[in-house]
Amino acid sequence: MRLKSNELAPTFSATSLNGKDFNLSKPRNKLLLLAFFRYASCPLCNLRIHELIENYHAVKDNLDIIAVFQSPAEKINQYVGKQSISFYVLPDPDKKLYCLYGVESSWFGFAKAWTIKISQVFDAVLKHRYLPGSVEGELNRIPADFIIGIDNKIIRAYYGNDIGDHLPLAEIHQLVKSYEARQ
Image 1 (spheres, rainbow, N blue to C red):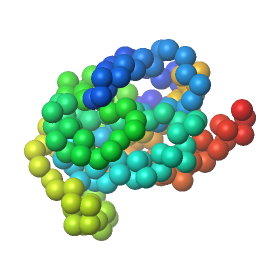
Image 2: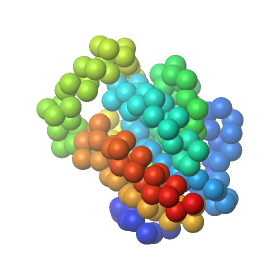
Image 3: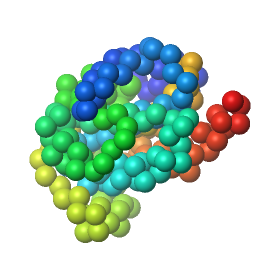
Image 4: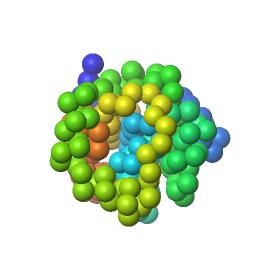
């Protein structure tokens, strides 16, 4: 079941790839982007991680990021871990967090991406060398992103329409600016 804005975010605790513990029920003084990805070697997922890394400096004072993958830690380290990531990355091979947040799968969304996102796939594979590899979990997993406030209410729930569809970076920046203006 999809979550909606103004609902309390389901709480969880987990340990990131670099050994940092995270507990959503603990108080925070920043917004949180909780981003669900597909598997660790997904070229579109690696491209999005690259985009988040490139843009993180502009929002890091008021936004934490947690990237969740349905792959085990060793596969995330093998693929995603090649990038220099300053935020939390969580393995969730049992897909407990995916279930908790209602993250979906869709063969239509899988096929749709190959028609409208082909230039992004080429960019990911040819320009950035994010070559596809092993698939852990569901091949047709669709990404989802959640902006969660310091009160643990969901400010924005975004369920993608295809395998490369995430909350636009411009919208993330705007939500962070709105938060900064209230501080």
